[in-house]
Length: 297
Image 1 (cartoon, rainbow, N blue to C red):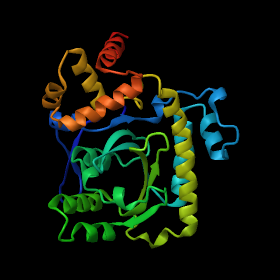
Image 2 (tube, rainbow, N blue to C red):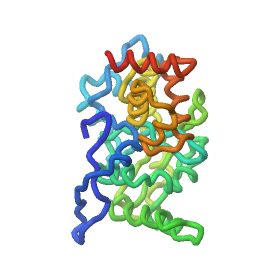
Image 3 (cartoon, rainbow, N blue to C red):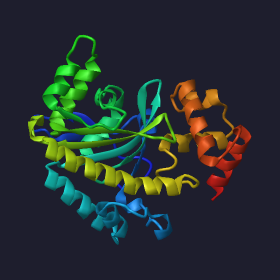
């Protein structure tokens, strides 16, 4: 998944052998996902911006000379703990619903990632709400997820989410919500997953190693987000926001943008506020000027 604005979307349906069948995504579905990025898109962090007393894992990632070397470091730690996959992404809470902003694909299960965002399963993924915003880890397994999804107050989409999570081979793991001190409506979500069917293997020692890897990776990636705060980047502006910027340059009103991108007016307003903050624009005119400068560069 090398494209930094979208990924090819695959159908979540599986045949009897468990193979995933490729299918084109509706245009509206493509526009609602996060910005996807990979290790290869991360630029080196200048030494002047590196933390003075970082853990050795962070320093190893910063000192790595290539994306492949960083991936070997993370994957070696991930597999040593007992996990096969790791998802890392930023979400914004919009009326209590986590709306994805960006997602690192380098360590994630590729088919499940595509299914998850295509079907907008973040809207019914109860782990987002059950994981404490204090960053305490949530340990889960597929039996618990299925049990919660089958309660009377849940919908058919909750049950579909649990079934397709099981079919993808992700059966147990750890889920963390890291709150942002500077952006109270945003969170970083880190998800570890294993094919082991039950959670009883995730003992305190495993949890400790998981937290070390999660926080070190978060520290490393946060340095890139900080560097991108004042500039356009794959992490700084999501694919949805790129669409909105293009619509702004075309002179569309908020209502017209909402209709064109199949969004609610509230969602457009939220992204407008995020874009104004990103570009340091105080009003719509300044944001349009910033968008025009960006499109010309």
